[in-house]
Length: 164
Image (cartoon, rainbow, N blue to C red):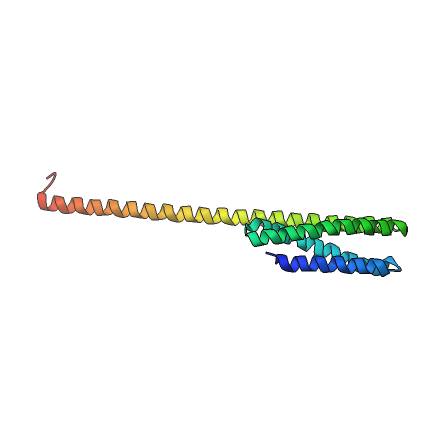
């Protein structure tokens, strides 16, 4: 699980850096590194938020809401950055950045689905093994009880001469 506090701090740091860089950037090349860090931090924070919400812990839920607010700030900053790229005639660069970010998010979602499917398979296999062990134990118990019954029957018949 991703530490929500670290993810929140990373996202807030990335937002601050991008805001500062956007104010002083003469060229978009210098801004590109910061934008990349912001998208990475956004991805990590989104994963941390989902994990924190799933955990059911109230303190994690409050932290998830803080991350949600930081993500909202990120969305506003993205709109500002898009405008900067548009004003400088580099909207194609912005579109490539957004496309790459979307591809990363799709890859992360695919990996999350794969991990969930693997976990489900692991649990199913463990359940099957548990059922097999229970079945073998019950079968062994029944076989032992049958053998004990036969022993008692033969012991009884040896003393009382049944069926002879």
